[in-house]
Image 1 (cartoon, rainbow, N blue to C red):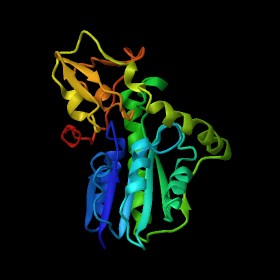
Image 2 (image 1 turned 30 degrees about the horizontal axis):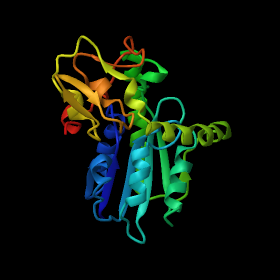
Image 3 (image 1 turned 135 degrees about the horizontal axis):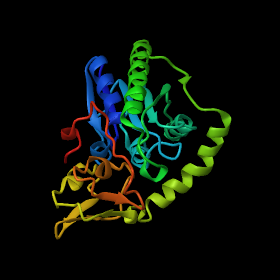
Image 4 (image 1 turned 90 degrees about the vertical axis):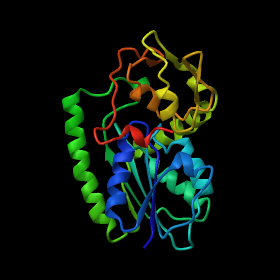
Amino acid sequence: MTAKIYWFSGTGNSLSVAKVLAEQLPEAELIPVAEAVNNPPAAAEVIGIVCPVYAWGPPAIVARFIRKMNVLPDSYIFAVMTYAGSQGGAPIIMRGMLESRGLDLHAAWGVKMPENFPPLGSAPAPEKQSEINREADEKIARIVAELQSLPRGHYEVASGFWRILSKIIYPPFCFFLHHRIDRFFRADEKCNGCGLCAEVCPVRDIEMVDGLPNWKGHCEQCFACFHWCPQQAIQYGRSAAVRRYHHPKADLADFRQ
């Protein structure tokens, strides 16, 4: 049984899940969505999509990949989505994207992980991060066990209120994402011009100009530049006091271009 696990992540939350799944599923290949979206790999018998929840829906880049993804007529497709507050109707939205191609989302799980979206506030304190990640590890282990039987019709979704909110919030989020939403980024006086932000950006939205990062207008809001900056020099809006975060099992080498 061949398997491909496609992942999108900025802080390593979703990547940490994808790594465990790739280790546990036989013959599984781990593939970044940011690379696959422009050159979709060959189909596989089992396809997993692992990504965070943005505005109670899948990231826009994941939506674009789903439209191009290569599949077999009988490919088993599942999703694992990481979230901080609620996953809302994200699995239902993703299922609709697949159904528009005549495909099924056979199962979907959610994993609660530490908050890392600066516009909504700071990441939790380190001790709280550890508690959340311990619980996440337990949930991931249960998902691995359940995946052994390739279940069908298994969907973890939020209550009706959050599903309705998804339908209201997600479309405008995707619209504004492509209207220079990265104009709110800036580098402050702590920036030493190391260029790491440009290296970790999954869509190469950052270029260094005169020793400072310049955002080019196609940001996916993963905030990898924000959280991985060793000087904590990258700010977003009024985010100077926001705590940075990346998953303890995430490796910077996985993000460098």
